[in-house]
Amino acid sequence: MRLFHAPHCGSQAAAIVINELGLACDIVRTNFSDRTELLKHNPQGKVPTLVLDNGQVLTECAVVMQYLADQKPEGGLLPRVGTWERYKTLEAVNFVATEIYQTLSVFWVKDISEETRTFHKAITTRKLEVLNSILGRTPYLAGNQYTIADIYCYVVISWTKDLGLDMGRFPAILGYCERLGTRPAIARTVAADMGK
Image 1: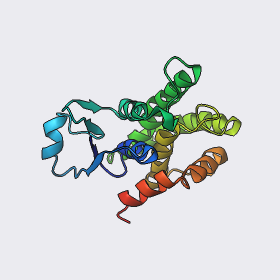
Image 2: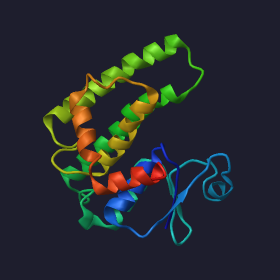
Image 3: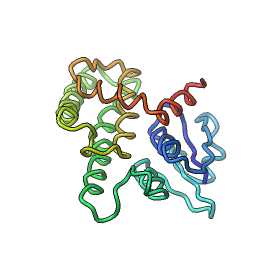
Image 4: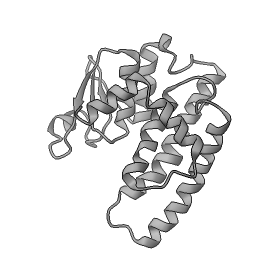
């Protein structure tokens, strides 16, 4: 397998899953100024793009993480098919993708007006309040088990530093991210992305 990945993108979550599970996968660091190789596999030129050994391709971080986790179910990152825990995990993954990721992505746009920025800060605050409430009640996003939802959430929340968002009013999120950041696979992936 090959994973096309770029630092500071959602694809970091897929790279962490690979490292957590010790999967045999070549992680191809992608430079967006030259997407020639990536475009051969994904016409959108986006990461993550997972190319299987048989040439089949998967895109979209939530799906790529599920596929990777299912390659090694004994790793426990995605509960088994048909269980309530699996559906709660997938619900949490979708919450991160549609509520947190989408809300924060607006702040990457360079030329948005101050009025738009203020409007989206209010929306972001409400979404983060929900996340903070969840993490104030349970150790992990989908309950008592560390899953792909936590990996995705960790990556997306890490962007708040670069975006200059004040997270001080969300202590449960901060504590959760600090705790997850000590996991060897997360620390190793983040260090590799920073060139350390």
